[in-house]
Length: 247
Image (cartoon, rainbow, N blue to C red):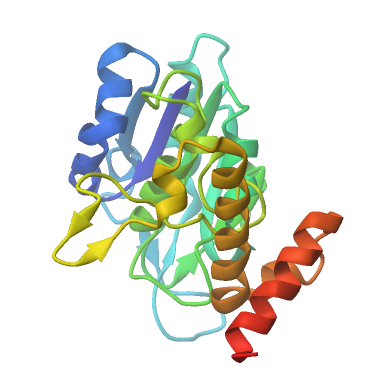
């Protein structure tokens, strides 16, 4: 996968060269580049922003630098395209697990990380979608782009050491992930649930499902509202509700 980012602060993306994503870049599974779109401004003062027409607080990013930077990204690509273009915008759709899976299907992604008060509306004619991390405003789109890239790259083949790590993550099944333990079995009096050391894989699977349901019920009940439950899941959830109520 090729990933490009347009940003005024390229050095903020240093973490992308670390950990799992860094290894994916080293192996060539990900081709990652950040373009400073200030380099493409034709303004004699090197400005990339200006006051909004009609007045108002803050400054807006002007279209010319971003249009030209995106054209340069496309020109440098084998297919002469910037790929699927994502604009980081607080007004965009809230990014979630399914978006990460969907974005991982593209061969080329370009993220536009804005700054200042916002964008000249004409910039949005360049993009395929607008995404946001949530209902809050950051000082720029860089952190949002890094989060989205991190979540997306994990779904690329062979990026994780064990692809089952992604399939077992929270949200993959529509539930939060069940509790996990490793050695020692007894740490300062805190013991691993006996079922996990029993060797009974059917019982382990049932325990994991029940505890995933429990965690979701207690922490994110909204995830259960539209879930199509199996009979086994419904029985387990009834047990959980009874247990949590102290019955």
